[in-house]
Amino acid sequence: MAITMNPARLTGIGIVVLLVAWAILAGALEPILSYRDDIVYLARQHMFLVLTSGGAAILVGVPVGIWLSRPSMERYAEGIMQVFNIGTTIPTLAVVALSMTLLGIGFPPAFFGLFVASLLPIVRNTYAGLLAVPPHLKEAATGMGMTQGQILRRVELPNALYVIFSGIRTALAINVGTTPLAFLIGGGGLGELIFTGIDLMDTGMLLAGALPTALLAVIVDFLMGQAQLHLIPKGVNPLR
Image (tube, rainbow, N blue to C red):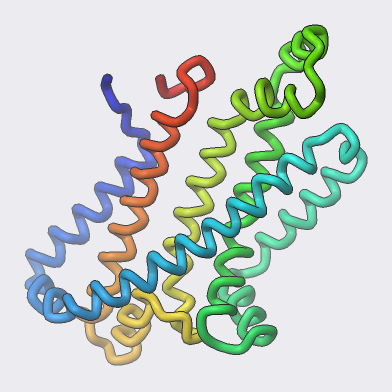
């Protein structure tokens, strides 16, 4: 089976390849590799933050999106979604600072800030994906005697899975790129190399944090793309 690559993913891979090529040509590869132990240690912290905060956003965002799509919430759903949309206008750094004000420093505020930053795409896509399910499919399921719960599980969710996965994919990409800010509030991650490198004007240290972060973003996007390709049933998957 041929695997299609979307332009956004190709662009991300191309940027990483160009950065690596530039680092080699500019003689920056050796200074970067001198931080290999730090890269491995901080990359583990980085991925732990992404997995925990992103996983929590999925566990909360998908049920919230489903809840908002129910007929009983029709009058209130758009207003609630506007609240989520307003939340995205707040700069991520401000969200991180607010998290620090409420929860102190360390893992908890970093987790909370990343969780909030990842939540909207998941809620929005889940809500929009379920609303986009053709009404005639739900009417046919009702005619077959299905309950509302059965219609949700057997008709609506399978048809909305592609859009839901797209929201999760976007959220995780945002999460990986935002996680370096966790260093500013004691959360660890590759931001330690990035911001320390900026402060010391050490290009090698800066790239030692920036290149793995870009690579992690491409890897996460690729893995989510493969999940989107293989886990969504063929009949409702535009990629198959």
